[in-house]
Amino acid sequence: MKSILLFSLLAVAILSLDSCTTVIDAQLDTGPVHLSVQGILTNQPGSQTIILTQTAAYFDSSTPPAATSATVTVTDDAGKTYRFLDAKNTGYYVWQPTGKDTLGHIGRTYQLTIGYQGETYRASSKVNPVPPIDSIIFVKRKRSPLSKIEGYRAEFYANDIPNETDYYRVRFFRNGELQNKPNNIITSQDGGFRGNNNGVTDGLTFIVPIRRAINPDSLYALNDNVTVELHSLTLEAINFWQQTRTQITNGGLFATPPVNVPTNIINDNASGRKATGFFMTSAVRTRSASVVPANIRVRED
Image 1: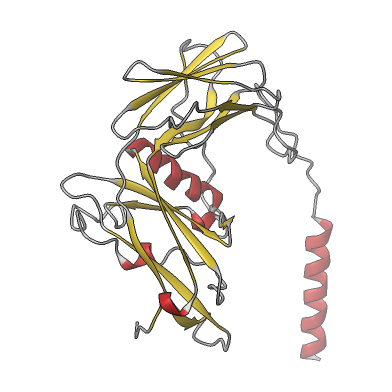
Image 2 (image 1 turned 180 degrees about the horizontal axis):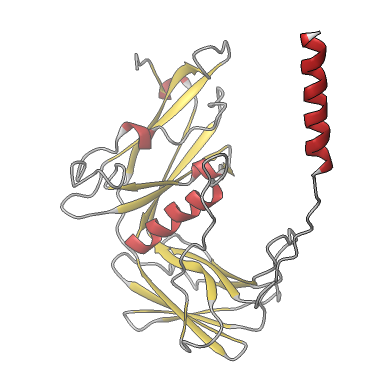
């Protein structure tokens, strides 16, 4: 009898909750359309691209509309101007080098200027130095302590530039494919973590968690090719990447209200339309290695 009574009470409670369910069709205002900028310029050879789009409604999952017919230039502090052209009218503004010239040069500061729909937007960024990547090694490991499946854990080695505060971003590719999950946004201060560094890692080898952050969830397989890129960042740029990762991974039981990631794209007209996105410049060092016996090490840790 107690079991029957308990079951009946649960059934009534479920029906009561179900009867109180109301479907709410949230209608969010789309708000004004703003210019969105994606600009990462490097010291690497080849063309450089700045992508301009227009912002869209919050729940709009379609590709953002291109911002075309803009005037885009980049000027360095040595007085040289680089013009970016949208030849295909797609919002992809491209600078093409002449000869062996590269756009980014370590130590120089670059100013982006965009003229769009009667507004002028500007941003600036400096190309900071970046150390070389000395080597990449691989160690055979299980995917997890309880797994019987094995793979190879990669680890890169680089030494932080001494006697100054340096900021970096690490990107990695598996067989030519960029690994771009939210947890693959890897940033570092002086080769260590931010917040509790206090110069302890200045000039030293990158710490183990940063060196081993270049692994996909499944680890690597024999004969896989791994490419690691080390990018220099400014203070503003590392803040952008860290806040971007925080917002992308902001979910679950302890999620906080979402906020806009700050931008360094400023309208000359303070009362004009705002912009989103970020403009940054980086020096880049790259190293590749394959999972072959010559690069495999035996390690206890």
